[in-house]
Image (cartoon, rainbow, N blue to C red; front, top):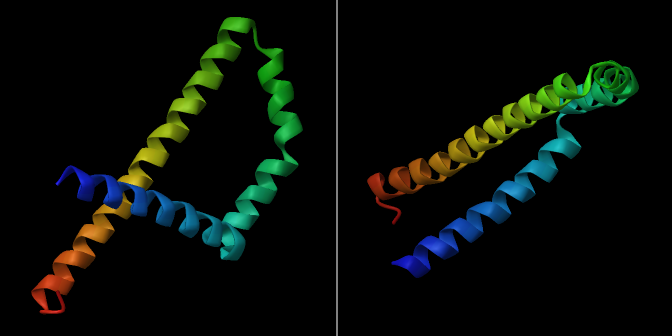
Length: 95
């Protein structure tokens, strides 16, 4: 059973990577957000750099944790989607 878990985790990790790359290349809303972030990156950095060292460290760590939280939720939702798909295929008799 551990082998299955490893292969399943490996498969889903590769699929998440593939879907993420495809999404970034084809989703216009994502591309608009990416463009906005790139356009204002210098302004953001200037503001962050204007803070004292403790505030700067806090802000960077806070944003890093926010991004990690979003990443964890996204990965979890993707995995749950696979599980739901397997359940559906099982319920309709495909597997």
